[in-house]
Amino acid sequence: MLTLYGDRDSGNSYKVELVLTQLGKPHRYVVIDTLKGETRTAEFLAKNPNGRVPVLEIDDGTYLPESNAILCYLAEGSALMPTDRLERAQVLQWLFFEQYNHEPNIATARHWLRAGLLTPEREYAFAQKRLAGYAALGVMEDHLERHRFFVGERYSIADICLYAYTHVAGQGDFDLARFPAVEAWLDRVRSQPGHVAMLKD
Image (cartoon, rainbow, N blue to C red; front, side):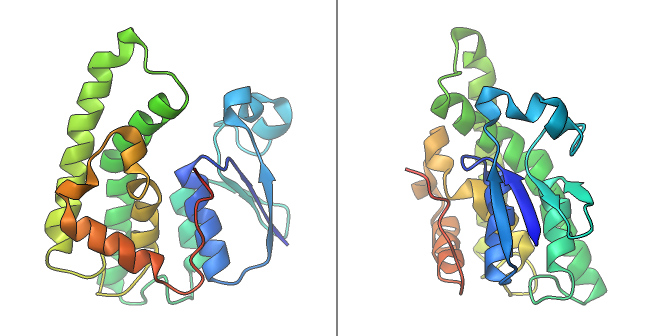
């Protein structure tokens, strides 16, 4: 059975759980509390020397870290990963965008607020993260004004990877009402078969 090592408050962990559930893959979830330093133990570092969640343990005992790499591995051969060469590249395009432009800003702002880590020293950095996060949401809005989903007009891991932190962006002080196309897309993602909530407050 597949084993997911993740943190319930992590969008990166959630996106893997969502794919596992929607693909009907039996798995167990081992909760790793990042705020308690559980990713820095020798036991966890043996699974991922980078000390981050999520990590997927495959049936043969191989450990695969990095959320979007895990999504690609799980989605291969399913409807969540296109077979067309260009569309596969476009899925990767959005996965790279999510990890470079979206997640470092929206997820970090959210984490600082939820974990009480927004110190006076971080106020300027927080403002910059909000600016960059809004810019990323603007890119998404422009695309979604013309498309129902991010690639090939079909639900894919491109949507899943961006949904994870976008749907909780309000917890990072982002006003999603400014992005009606994004909000409509969030509703479309929630309506997909097998959708599960992030189990957050």
